[in-house]
Image (cartoon, rainbow, N blue to C red; front, top):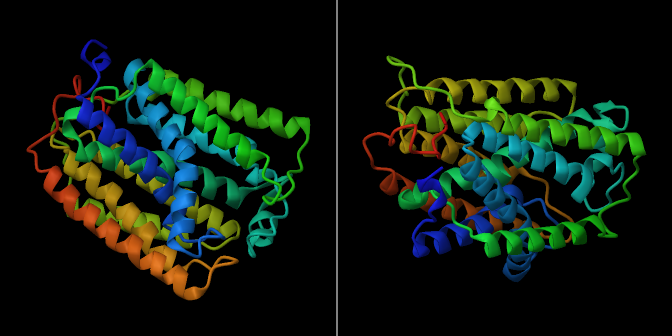
Amino acid sequence: MGTAQDRAPRRTRVVGVIALLLGAPVFAELLQTYLPNTQTALDVLLVLVFLAPLYGGAALLIREVALRTGRGWPGRLLLAAAFGALMARFVDGSLLTPVNPQIDYWDDIMSSTRIGRFSAYAAISWVTGHVVMSVGAPLVLVEALLPDGRTRPWLGRVGLVVVVALGAGVALLIHNDPDGGAVRATALDYLVCVVVILVLIAAAMSPLGRSSTSVEGRRAGRPLLLGLAGFGLMAGFDMVPISWVGVLLAGLLVAAAVSLVAARSRSPQWTWRHLAAFTFGAVLARTCTGFFAPVPQGVDLGAKLAQNVVFLLVVLGLGALLWVRTREPVLTSRRDDASTVSR
């Protein structure tokens, strides 16, 4: 933990914190252009600023916890899953909200794959979405752009307190939003949710949350092919039907993505370019599938498509910047680089 406790250079910390605060809500909510009340650029900006402490704050806190406790990417993603479960069950209560007048196809989501009070499709779609887009992708891409800050914390004690306070405040506002639909749940429902969240956190803090070791002779694969794989897997995940078949397909795609990255990242030749390429492919896919999302209430088709185009251009620019910033021969040793997937 020695060097990990020394914070990164001030400029890196400032850029990293701002990039995560703004990038996480864009990846998590805005790329799919499904939110109502985003008719104008100002509306989109207000949504971005409002959600930044919640999504970006969660990504920052997970990063800090992982670095300070020696977690690798398995631990980060398990903590991200706990955040996803917390979001869907306690913050916006979406998994326990049978009716939401703001989204036309809400009834299909909640009724087609029900298990008791829960929708299996909603659970796998929303929780996985938080793991990948709310936390995983923003962390990978921001850290890939900031090589001198990958292994060191960005927040001090005051920063941690501020992030927690702002994130909790936004979470409370969303939880009490009268327009979000009525949550219908029993004490048992909440108990099950709490147990799931605690199990995920415990798993992250266990040896499961640490890095695996490299395997001599294992190939990392070409970054371009990994990017295509990330694109295909994410596009397939986003396009599965809202049905039990869709739940099965989504589960298979998640398993395929985890298996692919877990296997390739154990190669001694695994680099940040490999990791960034796979992640960027997924982000680009989410951006492209956003063109096919239904037009949200209160937003006309032209405004929605304009958002799609702007986000696509931004993401393509991000890809070009990543290509330049990840020009490195190999990752630093697995002992010293806490930001690699294999850790």
